[in-house]
Length: 233
Image 1 (cartoon, helix red, strand yellow):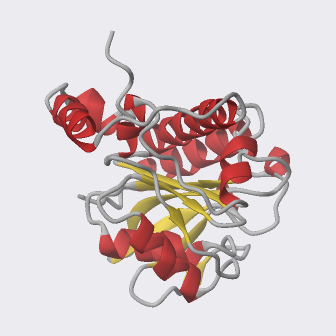
Image 2 (cartoon, rainbow, N blue to C red):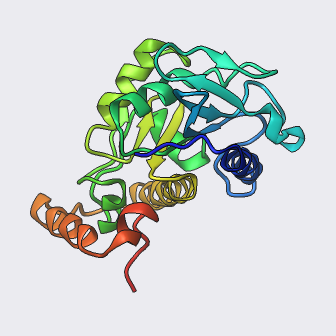
């Protein structure tokens, strides 16, 4: 993932983070001050990320409130503290060079599964949108901790989304738009899966079928990888 440090681009990214933060509630992904977003960024020669601040009502969020955090040591710059979940954002960027943006949210249906410590199995072929045969649920750990970050990285191995037990979900993408779109897609899948569980239980697709779908998504073009693999028409 190539990062940049053009000041004009920084303003664009800050404005995009504010716009997407304002969309968390209308999209159903999070309410109040919950949820956080980041993009990979280089500033003053330092590899880092721009991330939403901690505890700020997104209706009052301004581009200047967005916090720059260095990847190598977690040092931050800005008038406000970074999100309390800055650690797993930082660690995802360190571990996954292809990731350009991270969205963390507490959507209703995804969280309903996460509090049961359930992932999302292959009940529908679109589960492959997250990059694998299923969407895993990471074990529980206290928010903001290194332990939670380790669990999230393991659940995200070869995946672009995961659930966090008793917490919420994470989606990653090449850019902020694709990560946000994937988060919405995962929440829709969680809603469908819960409905299926409550009406007799879904029939799961076998591994070989999910592998065929994954191959089809990979050959579907750039949209399948960077635009949250929108369902082929």
